[in-house]
Picture (cartoon, rainbow, N blue to C red):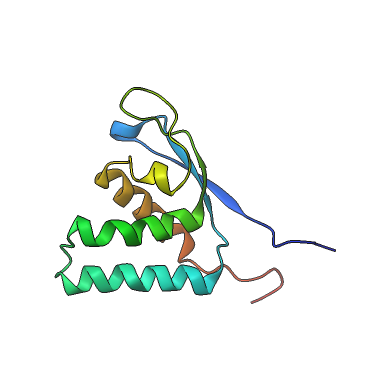
Length: 118
């Protein structure tokens, strides 16, 4: 018998300017919390005609990413390890936050059927 919720992760390997960087993302985050964070992000995006203000969007992105990212190998400008935490997220460029979020959306918004389902 399981004594806690299993955490399923997937490694996202980044490319281009971030070649060699990766983050492990929880792909079975609690659905209600995940959807609340996604809804908050979508609201900010739609209110701003798909051109959201980073100042308004960043805290919502931090909320989402803090929920799903469990590990990474990200470095700061000096090459020191960034903590995999909300504080570490604050040191990541906006373009990288969006890149990670886009990859996560593609993966976590697919709903696989349970074994034996048709």
